[in-house]
Length: 180
Image (cartoon, rainbow, N blue to C red):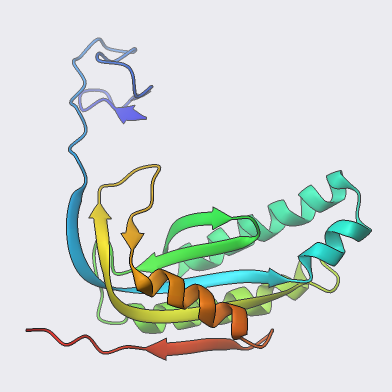
């Protein structure tokens, strides 16, 4: 969606002029590609397959909606930016578009909240979350909309850490970047 600089109205991406006031809409700047130190939280559910087999489609949708809402809330509350939802996995990023000295700590706190929140969801009997947290250098597209903004081995490794984490615990590794 494009937002009109004159009146603040959101307009469809294909609009060249504001549908409310008629002002010309500025073209979005292309994403800026850079390398940055970021922290990734990758969280996935354990037990979702068996829960899906036990519940009817509507009940499962309700549980998953609760899950995604709770994950978004917990991750964003700690300063994370949701990168994507993939099936029942969630990936969030700290350190872009702006970085804070305590981004890794915020990410760890968010991961702990995610892991502790899932068992308390209504109708989520047997569900547990696993989370992997990793800090390091990644290729970042600042200003990317509707596409991946972070790429690199860091993302894959955070996903792997999550997959080997013990439910109700999480894997946490920090890689110190060597700056030239």
